[in-house]
Length: 288
Image 1 (cartoon, one colour):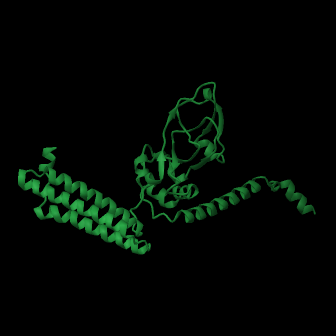
Image 2 (image 1 turned 90 degrees about the vertical axis):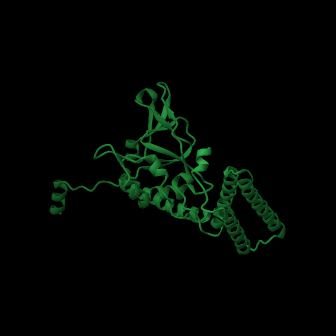
Image 3 (image 1 turned 180 degrees about the vertical axis):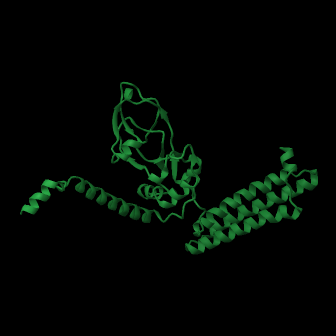
């Protein structure tokens, strides 16, 4: 620890005072602007805040005194570092309220859950696999003995994001309480933080060209036709600024309803009788 402190130092003792004090002043200014913006000036809160800032300045002065009194920088750097960290955190919070948001990443709105399970031979399972996704997103109903490898447990409400050949956009919405749900380890099970992002809106973020194009440039190659993404790269993708939750819900529901109509039309088209293009049909029409 002593070696760490000897490798960092202020270029001037005055910076040990000015640096945190400037942060304190900026924090006060952004706090006042927030209160003015929200028409929420309260003298009691302001007095409490200013009293706290005065206490922080006292700590800084104590650190400077110990440097000259006992000839060590450790206490000074600890106090200045601690106060500066608190002030930077408070500044970020104030700026966020002012509309200057820190870019969020995918890992800020979802949690990756990769709990592995070995299927039991006499148990029944609902298996979400790549072939079943490609088969009109119809999961497989299998006995454990028919499943050859370990799988991930699928949470009741999540989004399965495929890490193999992401250009195909195999992203699966799961929202049911069925027992024994499992998925291929080629999927990343993502639990959505619905306090930050709407479930449907999150799905449409994940299937967006923005995410797909980024990942296609970050693939870890295993072969020319099998390209897997690195989950860490995926989770660290920076997101555009998220709209308000109400707007997210409106957009998510609108896109979801459009998807439902497309699926319904596809189902209707799949059930239409196939036109007779045989030579016999042609002959009948010519005879008529």
